[in-house]
Structure formats: C-alpha cells, structure tokens
Image 1 (cartoon, rainbow, N blue to C red):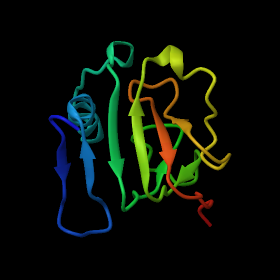
Image 2 (cartoon, one colour; image 1 turned 90 degrees about the vertical axis):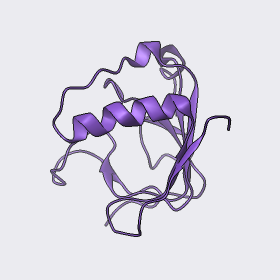
Image 3 (cartoon, rainbow, N blue to C red; image 1 turned 90 degrees about the horizontal axis):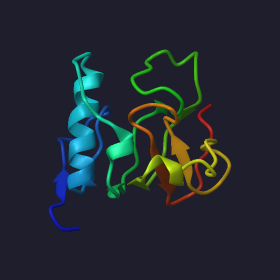
Length: 127
C-alpha cells in the first residue's frame, strides 16, 4: 500500500499493531481525538477508499457506538485478524451490521467513523 504506515506499539493489552493507508491515517487521527474527548472533524461522506489491517486482532469494542466504554450496553466484539475498509456510505447500506453473522459487516453505522470490517477468521461471541 503506497503511503502506508504501520503502527507497532510495545506489546500491551490495550493496543495492537495495525497498518493503515493515507485515508485511514486521516480517519485514525480524528478517531484518536474523539477517543480523548477532543474536538474532531471527520466526514464519512467525503471519505475516499481506504484500507487497513490488524493481523493480530484488536481489543473488544462496541460494534454500535464509537467511544463506548460501558460493556453492559451495545454489541461487543473482539475481532481476530481482520481488514478494515473505508467506503462511500452509499455502498454500505446493504451490508450486515452483525459482527457474528459471518463475513464482512459494518461497524459504527450512523456515526462519523463508520467502516467495514472483514474478518479473516471466524469471530466468536465474547463470553
């Protein structure tokens, strides 16, 4: 991927390695601002195609609401190895939002940070 940046933090339970193209770099920069409670500007309607991957997987997150930390609410998923795609929103309308349906699904539908998750192995529900 041209212009790709691979982020390989020291091993810990909160962050896993990922590689992101320039579109995802912009997405990630604004997402990190939001996760810190800062003002952010990201318009998914203006997003260009983007690709990212996390071959180690990721920590559990709410599939419905970005920045949710209340594990008693939402649909939580701890995705194993996966790709993530940024696409124009009109291409997402027919994709499922259930992370356990098998195959690609939309994460954070209706939010600025909507994207497509493409699992590379079967995702098991969190117990």
